[in-house]
Image 1 (cartoon, rainbow, N blue to C red):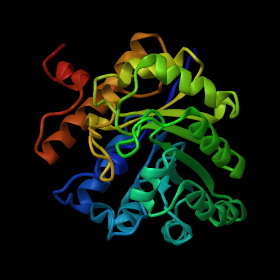
Image 2 (image 1 turned 135 degrees about the vertical axis):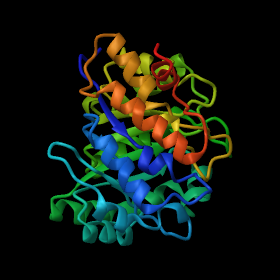
Image 3 (image 1 turned 90 degrees about the vertical axis):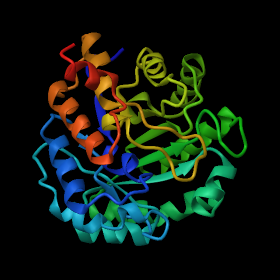
Length: 298
């Protein structure tokens, strides 16, 4: 098990993209700035996808221009293709993320392309990024189940993760998009991928639909993974995946990690304050049990 875990905070992107009520640009900027003050090292700031598909993030350039970038903190942004990459580069991004799925059916629903076609779209992005000195992270969705095809063969997960790493992604995040995984399945999936991709280049991303996210993270930590994606206040979901509830709450993750004696560099109280602020902004109770406990004086 690692002694230090890097948390990739995806709340400003994955957390907000599924919100129906439009969140003001100023509030998105404030969210990123609040998160920057917590000690997080990686904050996914926004997404340069087509506003037609994700209207909530149509203000990506304005958000990225408005945030205060702190030294030592990286602010990756999601891009679907070369056009999105060029928009992100023009806005000043120095790290981007590309995304595909291990499920053929999910890829067709999400990107209007199959797995191989989606990987082909990324080839010019990776080529340009290498020339521009821009780091690229890769996402593999539906690694433990798909809302359209059901079971996803481990061989497909391994194939896609291996392809992204071989193309030049410095890190590949393995995502249980609809949160159906359980600890033994999560462990088996990670072991299979780690046989082909170095563990140091892997991250895990669990949704909490069935309340299994923390247990799944623990199972993967025991295998040696040291990077975990999460979203403040447990915000998020996927607009293209029926049944995808919120992400694992960053506050709950940090509480568990600190309780295990692992280092994150994150100030839990500040993070919980940010989670409560975001929940109030969205008009709901925070999805973080740790945040509620801290607010109650626990």
